[in-house]
Image (tube, rainbow, N blue to C red; front, side, top):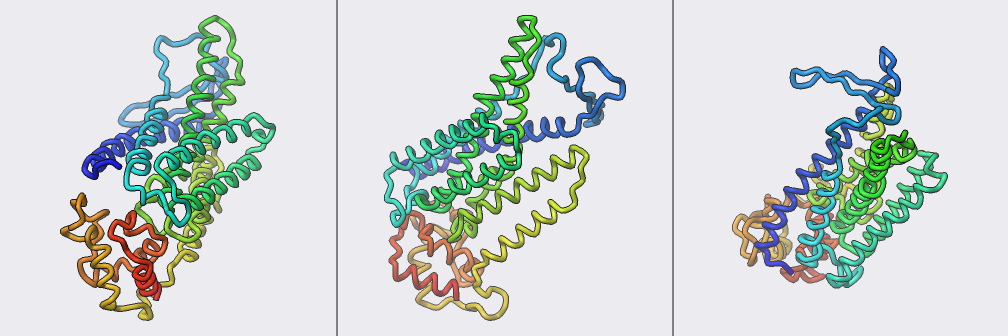
Length: 390
């Protein structure tokens, strides 16, 4: 286990890098898919040109031309987009080790599900990423890939199965992050094994003076489109650890599937809009789905309706004071904790009542106390859960 201070600063530095390069990767993905969706046949036909796009930005006018296959000759400077993807994946895997594999084991391991060692945890993670990529890549070589709807349905089912499998082995928070890492691995592998090699084949052919085979470009474009639909679900997973009401829910894997589907639907709306198809039902359906997910996962705590607990019983407050406030306090007393995690404090009854809906699921699923560092007993846990759900 890493020293807490060292882990905190490594986490900060690598997470900052991960966010920066992730923005760069997702930004280029969005931009080029936007280009593909918005290019139109040129007003004045040009040989070999499949489409053009005019835009204005920052006081300048730009004309983008997309060739049907490739230009007659290569320019002296050709820009490649790959390091954004590689850096995002590398920094993401580094974060997995810093936070989940080398950090407090309680973040990832729930002994009631599977009492895993650090090495077993890491092997499960890295192994499933590799297997997931191999299954996806194999499916892309089957005739099913020519039927986008069915391909997407099967992919969604397999991803949901992966979420279920992770949730049966790991804590909810770790399960979510591993699903995100699995999807991120597929996306980065698409760039490394298919998109960039396909582009190199076409460039090498032109260098030899040959007419490039369009198939590698077609395959690369298909994988790029797959990546495009996966971005919004991955972005949610990247921020999911801020929302214990999702990963700590009893049906967290199914909730993740629903949220991922909402993200993919929103991405589909943007793609259709770029192609000139103004679909009127997708966004309302996505909003309705979010509302439905919020309703069905409501803890039914009675907050705000006058029927729920309006104070904190002395025995409940005593448990929270002893087991939770060593970390969650304006002045933490737990060694290695300098500030309250996420700024959440339980120093007085008002703080506890305000967080009641979060306390229940976090304590019931044994996500908190983290790694049970303060040794909360089962009886204490049951007492807090009963109060929080009362």
